Image (cartoon, rainbow, N blue to C red):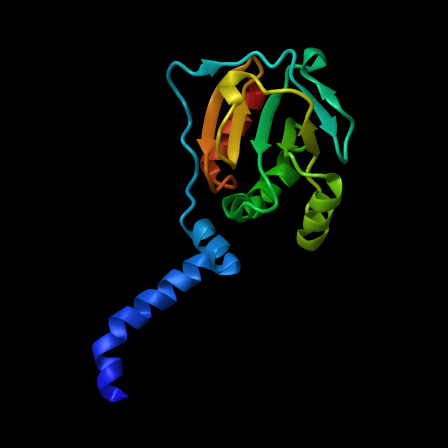
Length: 182
């Protein structure tokens, strides 16, 4: 047995490490551990026209972006079964709690309210959540989730992040403060 362990120690450690990356709770932990603040687009920001895009409210009123006021928008496309989405939710919760009166937040999913509500109840979330009624504009369309965008008051996309991120960073908070003040 000693000879077997000595000979196969690295193989055993490798298998254990892979298992930890596959097991959902530790997978989410590792994703959260390696998530950084998203990049801010400072030059030639893409512009988007949200007119024509509509969201069916699951726990809030439905939204038609034809009627939107000029506020900063934080929009995240996500799902309850997505480990990177789950990993970034705690940092989003902190930003949402501090900026919900100053920034319009939209958490967009294809899932039913029953599934989302179970997830929210378990994790104590209360994000404004929506199902898309139609396709989003191409500038905020993504083939992967999570996909999160911060859009300034004039429609410029200043953050375009695919994958998990730490949204509760001083960089993002400073950006939101600057965009709100404009």
